[in-house]
Length: 196
Image (tube, rainbow, N blue to C red; front, side, top):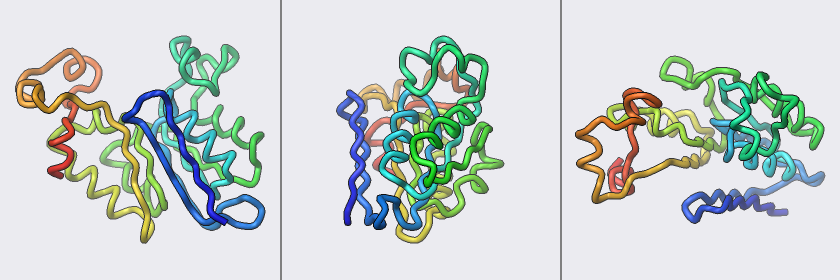
């Protein structure tokens, strides 16, 4: 049987389509998917993957739920305020499909722990992490993902990008996001990503 998980979240550039052979009970055979980010895009992705019967889902996030999350992150509600997102997701996903194994990583993925976290997942879905990586580390970031995927594995990376024609000006002048939100980070352009 072939199962497809297609997620379209209202933005033409954000589309995840995973098609994989699945087992007899609707649970995928030996499939490990790591989702980095448990926010507005990570929540529906892990929800759909769990309902589709993905064998193991890993979720990486270090944030706690706050009031500003509730209107755009569907797994959380007011009783979750102040609690770690990954712990809430594990509990709620286990109620949806207890045959899917949920691994949680309650930490911020960084250069020191990234290789240990992603080791041998079949599919890695990175949600908005690329902006925090920074231009000088992008090549290493992609290589770590590539080297740590299971044989034949795939990576899906969602990123906020800047228009190609604004890219050179942007990379030479620090803006609000680079200064206060992702120090050292940056927004890539479509062309700059294709060069990697």
